[in-house]
Image (cartoon, rainbow, N blue to C red; front, side, top):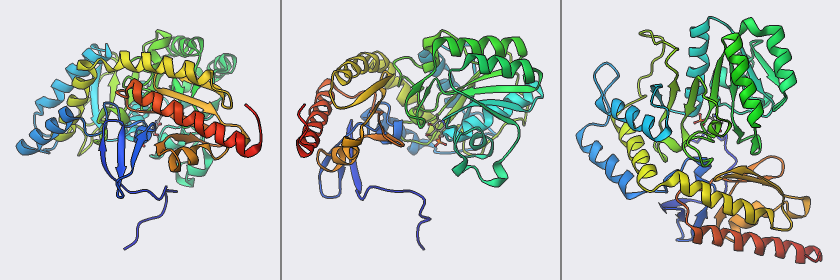
Length: 386
Ligand SMILES: Cc1ncc(COP(=O)(O)O)c(C=O)c1O
């Protein structure tokens, strides 16, 4: 049997990981400034996380949602405390797309409406409705196409108001990333998020904060939407939630009421996933990782803005992007193969930094030195003086 070849991969085989480093099968060490695509929140193979999973594995890994699973309640309480959203309800699932799919569906159950407002350059996942709300026609199959999604320009308050004036009574939800990740680290303005909040209030639509990538402390706040001082009706989460253990979830405001059978999943909320997610939150709390992400992120941001050769540095906390000019078009590849540093990309020319929230100052220095070296090598090759 062969693998279904859908991923353009780097020809590197990772066999070991610890903290912000991974090692390949030749023993070469790499600095992970990509966090395995924003997934590694507390650091690879964190001992507390490993112990939590190991301990749970010896007791029970899985039983279905047909019995009490007290770990789910424990997770809900810890999540409420760490995120500051004590008054929300938690539904557990397995991935980011599934979280968004459930959020969009729940909004529609709640207000009986069909239209969803989404934004240009958004990415919400690959399940049916999540992908329909994703602004990338290449990954929308004919069966996913629907007239129910209205795409609007990002940060365009006037377009949003006009849309609500026209379709307001049929709009079920607005789904938005506070910081678009796949779209290239583009931040929503505070005023835009506030506008969404007030229009959703006025028209009884549901504000869905897709926090799959920018949530879980990555932005320096638990949810990136927090910087606008607004509360969403539903927050969706995945990536950092399990530090690599597949787990997702949605936080649901109290006014959205559950009914038996309206949502469901076989694997979501299983014992092992809850143990992993609990361990992540304990580490975030004990090691003060959100504050650390904010401080280290600000420092990194400031140093990057002073770095000649790269452009348009943007983002918050440890979710940072910058543009790479044509003369540095191989920068990401060179960082990987010459400097042994993983970074993320957003096409066509954006480098994304999404390291573990526990990355150290020394590792940030290591990245900055390597970046500087690659910029200088590229400039020397071009004969450009910097
Ligand atoms: C903002 C956002 N939403 C949803 C998803 C989908 O998550 P998953 O790949 O876990 O389904 C992603 C994945 O990159 C994402 O960045």
